[in-house]
Image (cartoon, rainbow over all chains, first blue to last red; front, top):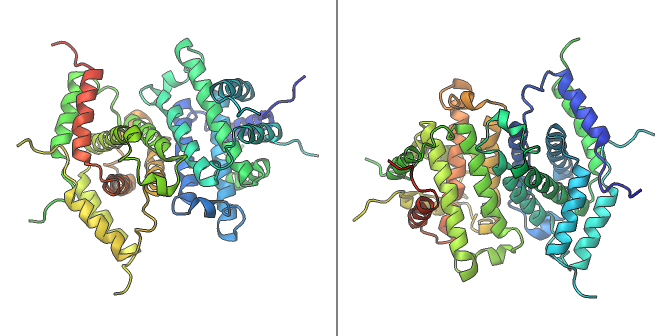
Length: 111
Length: 111
Length: 111
Length: 111
């Protein structure tokens, strides 16, 4: 059995429980979750916008941004996994399939 | 030992190998990956923009959008995991910490 | 009379006529237009994601990207102006007010 | 002479003066401005994410969101116009050309 590229099982359950405990299912339509994902990506991007590429390597190591970038990465992941979950998409399978397509589209450099 | 909420280990390795085989490390600065993540989220959002919330529940089940939405979810996941990886952020830990903060910020409804 | 910072009058009318002629008013809720704006910004960002800052200065001058970047800038502008229009927000006044706030938040360097 | 669909002349000058007075030209590469535009769109989208389409019509009229939405629309406009300006793209001409393309792509309903 091939190990999964990504395993989101426990997180999907945790997010569903979290939504249930707050009566949030009414808000968690795929359309709304896609918008929320956008908003979080916007917050993540803001960390990088005025930094050079070289400076961008340091944002997770510098005290003034490390916690912020960790939180924004987490927020993006939370909404992405939640969105896949409510759509009943197997994210691991979708990723595995996409990586096959990507390998066809972008063949490796000849060895 | 608590099971991980999310496990991206195999995917991180696969993505790093993929970039190495194509000499893409030069492009994969955190700043650039954050932009690429944005672009993919934009493509995902486009699937939902003219659909109602109710219609949005069907996009992963309807033949004309199912494959598209799976691919866009995968693309977002690929860049998110790659970005966390190059930043050396432990995405599982970041998510676990963020969920604690979220639970404090949004207490569950009283039972 | 102060000249306007931005004048979108003719474009707002043109966009409303365009939507009317295609029976698109049913789709142009502010929520949907905000999503469409996101999608177009994603397409614009994709032009820049693998380019360095220095290379980014050339995208509107190089044959292979010039037309593309013009179209994406236009698409973002179209949805932004349409969104402000359906919300009945005076974009010129909103901009004028925001620039006053920005000048307070970021005072100019002392001369 | 056809009136312009959009006139951003005064705003472009004001934004350039604003950047000069703060020594911001070093940050205003097209790549960076495209990222900043993304961030602002993310903030705008957040206003709409948990609102229904019907509720979204009210955000510019309700006291608790009216000023916020005006500010975010302005921020998006500021970065869009600044980006077009540093790229030396004539936004009015780009919009006029794109509307011709859009009219060909989406013919009006027969009368």
